[in-house]
Length: 466
Ligand code: GLU
Ligand code: MG
Image 1 (cartoon, rainbow, N blue to C red):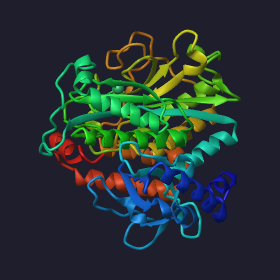
Image 2 (tube, rainbow, N blue to C red):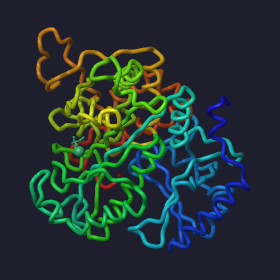
Image 3 (cartoon, helix red, strand yellow):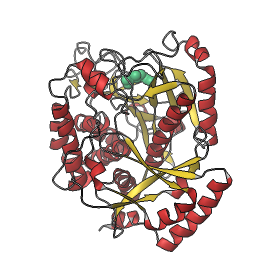
């Protein structure tokens, strides 16, 4: 175990129990009779175990049992197996992160906390996605880097009660149109209220392009907190919407051939309290270290696509002209570039400058997504990479003379994304062989599951799964 792994060991059992006693008293006083403990699997599905609030102390001290087979679950709830994980035998311990425990405003009587997963002897489970994100954040911290991250959440709302195969938008209206907000005024107000009560710092809420589609963005946080917030926001959107007779989909492609749901990741590396995307000699003020970090992300983007856009329907979304970031290139405020550089408005740059990974979507496990991006960025920083020339226009257009080769399309099939993932020495090393192999096995099995299926069938089979 290196120093970083040592950080991931759970704190002393008695200290955990004492903290949980206090947390349980707080949650109980706020009316929560039960706590929902969530993790996100390799298929991108949020799974849960609940405990009565009075049992939280035991859960924090000893963990809640869960089978490791969840690591090889597919999007349709069938299971595959990898070289290390699969089958009916074994037990893991879910340890709640009590710092994140919060009553759920749209599920009165319930609270929520994310979990890390450990083996029964207290060893960090090598397949735990949240521990992977923590390990990568610690790796960055060990070299003086802090990452600030935020996921944008996009979703499509539809009338509940309509047949599964038939998403009916709750209100008609124009893309980004005020009529879309008026039609869902109470629901969207309740959403903002609920998130506020849960301590989520919302930056913006708006109707998106596709029918019934909305988007919410939040303040940047440390990488694990950003992934936790992504989970909390999604479950809050779902719960508030259900109270208003709606169901929601975060799927990459709700309907084939239409604009899908992105899960864009904003991030900026910081050192000693200074944003490395600002105030340097590189393009648009990038520092050398900031540029190298982003160049590392760009270098690994085809492999990262397998992690950040992993669903069977992801290739249906990742196409040109949808602002989904289908091309491996970067550009300032270029919404067709997979890596969009955001410099911020004049006067706000030092705080606001960041990069947005646009090719990621709503089927991603957010913990894997942040962990993999940090791994790629650190590899770029180690190698002192520099960015290739910027793409200033539509990456699909023929390149201007002298501006270098046309940018590469990101993987267009699950098989291609998987091949690039397997080729990535950076992700293989960072994830470790158990997580790497198990994630690969899930991708392979999902590809088999949908081999030969028409786009409509893939969208229909996965639309209500995320
Ligand atoms: N819905 C688009 C996507 O699939 C993104 C639109 C936007 O730029 O926010 O990623
Ligand atoms: Mg959007």
